[in-house]
Amino acid sequence: MNNGALTTLFESVGWTLVHSVWQFLVIAALLQMALRGMRKSGPQARYVASCTALVLMMIVSATTFTGFSTARRSSVSFTGKGQANVSSPALSPTGSPSKGQVDAVSRAVLDGIERQERAGQAKSSEETSVGLNFIPVSAVQVASWIRPWLGSLSIFWAVGVALLSIRLLLGWKCHRRLRHSRFETVADEVIVVAKRISKKLGIRRPIRIVKSADGTAPATIGTIKPMILMPA
Image (cartoon, rainbow, N blue to C red):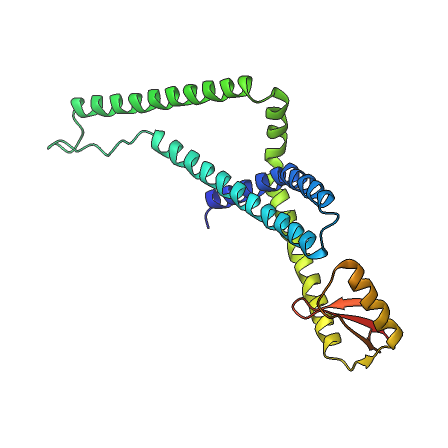
């Protein structure tokens, strides 16, 4: 991966992280309003709403990343096309370029420089117009302050993801060990209380409650077939 691809990747990830702040806040606010309107709904419905919000966050982040990556590649491609495309002049029979060939090359170089200048002026004028009409000056200034830190922000985010993934893997291994440990049955009073709470919460599926000497605190283990683990 060359430096240009790394720069594109870091900038795309960095801007995605920056925009995810307000995007996630909007999604969280919508979820909060939805949960308030679902007070009388069962826990399954609220769980589905929360999972939908998480999936929506992933979709928004992926869309933002794709948009910035495409814009960055288009910008690099535009810059490359704007450069003067001058081929090596064919030599005259004497072995050196003729005066007409030198003049043709000079005109091609000047035309390329003029095209670059016109493209740069048009782009600058367009950005200024957009900034004046739609984007506050403060937002442009904030973007200029953030841009130098996008690479560091991307690296910091990647390190955080790696550390949290290791923590999640260790927790999964611990839960797997607890799930395969020796269990004991709990008292009937605990089962009665659990059924009463399940009925109040609208949970219809049976709940398995066990005790284990390896457990130090009550915990819920499993996703497809969850169970409540009580310390012995």
